[in-house]
Structures are given as structure tokens and as C-alpha cells.
Image (cartoon, rainbow over all chains, first blue to last red; front, side, top):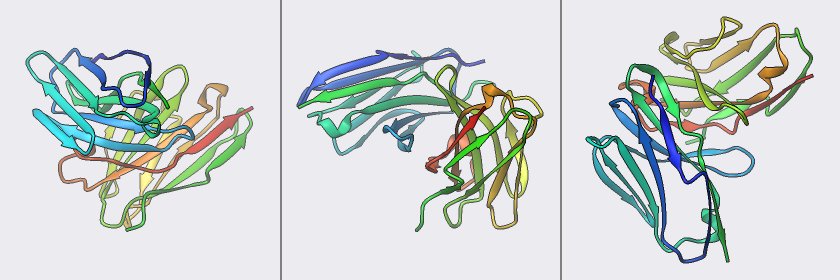
Length: 109
Length: 116
């Protein structure tokens, strides 16, 4: 069974700061997802990646398959980025997605 | 395109009852996955349906079941409700050709179930 660990669990930062959220997993995977969940429950898929790096606007996601580690970066953070960020992996012997516990991010103006 | 819709949005039931939740995927998507989210366990995968067949299943008891119709709409059913079934139930749709977990998933708003 894949174990997915995220760090930090909680993060408070000032507007404009560079944010990094980390995700590590224990067993080889076929894909890794970064999700964003706002208060109220709605979940948006930010990235799905299996190698390398992806960028969308101010968000960057990287993955190192050998080290079983991924990072989500937010540049020029803004209060609207405040949300819970969840890492999820597929493969590694499990059907469906296995989720991390999430990182609760608060960006203060 | 319209997004993923789920009905009802909120539901209150009592222990022992059963409940049926509905999910309509994005038009053209053939895979629907269901997830349970609780404060204690976080998000957990329930099952995935593709072309009216259950393709993958998570580690939940048989009280949790689902089905998918020919138009890709999906329902999940929970029988003999327990207090611990109180949760946010989310469905997500995807194209389905690679398997839901290996595709970008589009989530619905969820159904919040409270069991008393």
C-alpha cells in the first residue's frame, strides 16, 4: 500500500511570498496529482504529472521519480491561493487514487 | 460544457437507513470515480465505473455499492447507514481511456451526508 506524506500540514505566509508544498510517497507510481480544495468542499485538479515539471500561471509542479517526491510551488502568492492543497498518487499496487492528508495554506494580505 | 453535477447537495439520514447519491459527469466522459472525505481519514477512493462496469474498487465494506448507466451517469448507494458514514461524498469524471486514476479528474461539488 502506498503511503503519501505531505509537508507542511499548515502554512501561513504573507502575500507575495514564494510557497513550496512537498509530497513524498513510498511505492512507485504511474501518476501524481495536485488538487486544490477551497472551503465548502469543491476540488479542482491543478496538475497531473508522471515526470519532470509542469507550469500553469503562477503554479509549478515538479516530480522526482527516483526520490519518490514531488513539490508544488506558488510564486507571488495571493490571498485567493488560500486553500487546502492535496497530493494524490495512482498505481503502486492500489486501485484508484491514494491521497495525502493535505496542506492547509493561508496567505495573509 | 457543463461541469460535474451531484444531487442532492445535502442529506440527513438516520442510522440503519439507506441512501442513494447521484453523479452526472461532464458530457463525453465515460469514467466516474467516487470518493469519501472525512475529517479523520481524509479523502479515500470508493470505486470507479467505466462503460457501466466497476473497473476499480477501494477498501470499503459491501454496504457501499454503485452503478453506472448507459449515459455515464452514476449512482452510489450506502445501505444500513452508520454514524461513521457521515462525510462529504465526491464524484469525479474523466475521459476514461487510461483509467480514472491516470487521467485529469473533474470533481463535482459533493454531497454532504449527515447520519444521526
